[in-house]
Amino acid sequence: MGELVISAASSRLHAKQTADSDMIQAVEVLSQLVEGIRDDALNLRMVPISEIFNRFPRMVHDVSARLGKEIELDLVGADTEIDKSMIEKLTDPLMHIVRNAIDHGIEDAASRLAQGKPARGLLRLKAYHDTGAIVVDISDDGRGLNKAAILAKALERGLLPDGRQLSDQEIYKLIFLPGFSTAEQVSDLSGRGVGMDVVRRNIDALRGEIEILSSAGQGSTLRIRLPLTLAIIDGFHVEVGGSSLVLPLDMMAECMDMPCERISRETRQIWLRDSWIPYVSLRELFSLPPCDGPEYVVVAQFGQTTAGIIVDRLVGDIQAVIKPLGTLFRSLHGISGSTIMGNGRLALILDIPQLIQLALKREHRLVEQRQADLTEHDIAPANPAPRSA
Image (cartoon, rainbow, N blue to C red):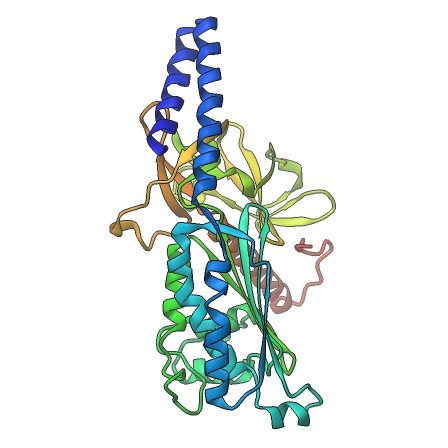
């Protein structure tokens, strides 16, 4: 099916070059049929996530009984569909996260009663679709992550740069480092510091992201966001420095001309409808010289986060057959794969979540630096630095 999509794109390109209206019309009809077959083929790959969820009741029962805890398992959205190629790759990470939640997160009955909680702990697995992605939440009503213990362990291992202030999300993500564990006792279930780094690697291999939400004494949620498919996507073709790049269409909100009068290059932000959003310039990211001509901004959205991506040229919609990158490029940030265009040229597929995170980090770093400079010189700014909504 992937090869058929590439061939159809090539036929469409050659038909446009011939300027033969009858040929163009015939190829458009063919392309519509290919698109219909493609959608049917992708639907055949989709299976309900209940194939994973149904494995957990027995496991939760056995592990909770082994630890002497009472835990209620709540499965929500088990009929949500996921690409079958992800089933086996997602099962092990979910198993490890659930075991950690039972062992570390949820307290024993006596501790819960002392805190005014029900003796029976609650563990919830929830799956749903959101903006072209599938989201899986693993939530518990336990003690939550201990930020102080995580920071202390990170300082002990020399993982924190001097004077660096970490956000809550950056602190929580330290648990994904190899060998990192705050457990006081090592059990056969957890505490060795192995496992969470493997979870992170497995999710990265699926082109996914992990977000951690936690409240002390109230519980925590690990949110895994994955693309709907690893095979064929609807993409948007852009160019930077003469090179072709593809953005996943379902993560794009809009495109617009570069708003030169509404941009703060000091803090890497763009004013968009009553709020500042961070941006990343692909020319700067790829170390290309500044653009002489007009530039455009693609507003991308991932979850609740929005950022701008600056490109040289907007080309249009395409169907992209995802080709994985080789092992040499495994650690490359901002690129999730490649595809073959209708003209036979190679195009790289941008990793929108990583680009948005990069834009956010640069924005926060530059805003903090500007505020530090103003404090150092004891100058009150006439116009406050723009900030994200």
